[in-house]
Length: 167
Image (cartoon, rainbow, N blue to C red):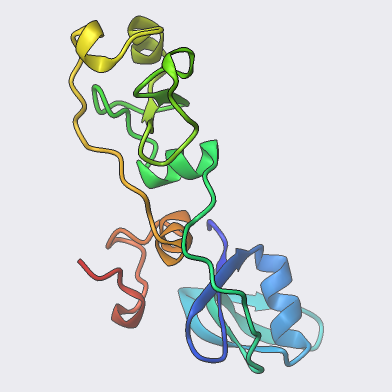
């Protein structure tokens, strides 16, 4: 389980929280379970409840408008689904398309997930200089997309269609 998606009272995605935090919010009547993991239940001495996958806050929380998702190394790996942008194998590092020593920035459009072997062989060069081809072009996800990527919402997690990322 990767976490629990928290929706505002208006059904807009806010963040992801740990399972423990999600249960506390539901038990304090601050949130309701919108989607539960099928077949999983939590039991305590006096309480039994479904394991929450998506919860919705009971009261609306005003959130400042965020146009861009903040860049992070973990975010790049999640965006690229831990797949190397050069060979498609499991990625463990982040590679700068234009190296930082050549003026490349830590940004969504300049970084891709890469396996250690390809990152090492590309070294301090651009993909063209190294003779390597990107399998997918880097893109800048929206804040809502990053939440869904973090939950693994790529069609196989059982999230309802009302949470699907529009194509």
